[in-house]
Amino acid sequence: MITARGVTWSVRDRTVVERIDLDAYHGQVVGVLGPNGSGKSSLLRALAGLRPLAHGTVHLVGSNIADLPRRTVARRLAFVEQETPSVVDLTLRQVVSLGRTPFRGRFDGLTRTDHTAIDAALERTGLADRANQVWNTLSGGERQRGQLARALAQEPTEIILDEPTNHLDIRHQLDLLTLMRNLDVTVIAALHDLNLAAQFCDHLVVLDAGSVAAAGTPEQVLTPEVIERIYQVHAVVEPSPHTGRLQVTYLP
Image (cartoon, rainbow, N blue to C red):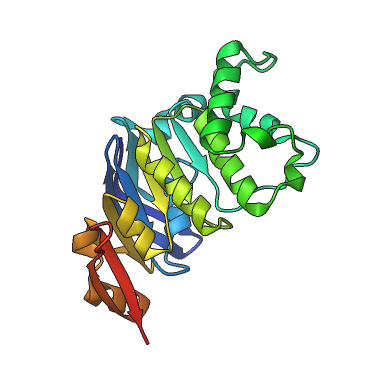
């Protein structure tokens, strides 16, 4: 569980995110929405303990994340960046194995437990047949899934993902979000696609200019009024006849 109260982060004299409250419970998928520049990535990094807060607190299962050793945090929480880094001369398997770093000593090799976790992560992300391929030869979508595999190899109880569907085709977007939905962990993910957010998220937080503009269930948040106010577009929102989840149709 991740709990944020009054989270505020500033750069010099500019406040990037301000007074954010958020609760993400075990087994829940929380989607963070908002236009470009609304503070989504900054909020996620603050929730992961990667930003020093100007005000407020983030608690990881009851403990202030700022007071916890980074190794302790990394054994519970995995963070998946928006951009996949360029890694020279490492195979996909070697990159995924970095997820086991919090459980190893500096000079320790991989154990049988480590290999089992790595194999499971590669399998769950559909990358087992790419395990020995050099990272830089993978497609953008494969590298994105590789980053998720690295996170899963940590065997975390909380995962924070920044735009995890970037670079993915439709099939792999659905596969990734279905996997995310079925994980028995706390998930917080920044998303752009409102229909995917409606389909896969339990709770939504909409940011605008660094503050919470709306929060609640998809039914409470994804209304034509909120969409027009935040995104400046007209939309019709109605239940899908196929899934029963909300479906957003944009109007010219």
